[in-house]
Image (cartoon, rainbow, N blue to C red; front, side, top):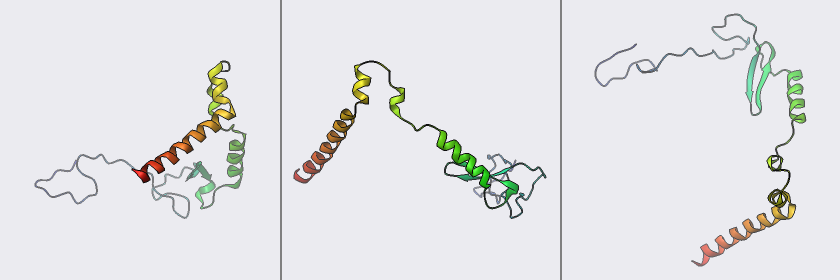
Length: 122
């Protein structure tokens, strides 16, 4: 634990009250970190849809793993809020009806037009 007197900050990048946490080293060109312990765990690369495995820690992701991940996403059903509605009743019928969706969008459009007109003339 570092200690100092006065208003000077320590020379290290961490303050005395911060804990030193070991960080996983960045991948090098060889695929191993600077302080690698030699294990052959699969390295991953972050992507917008998750982590993509990189065999041997190379720069390019594994093609077979990419295909497997793509197939898993294609099989996954798409999100639809109507799946969570009750199966019977007037309210669920009204909420699922296409005309209700169109009328709702029309009300939103008319509201936007009204706000624009009201802003111009007031």
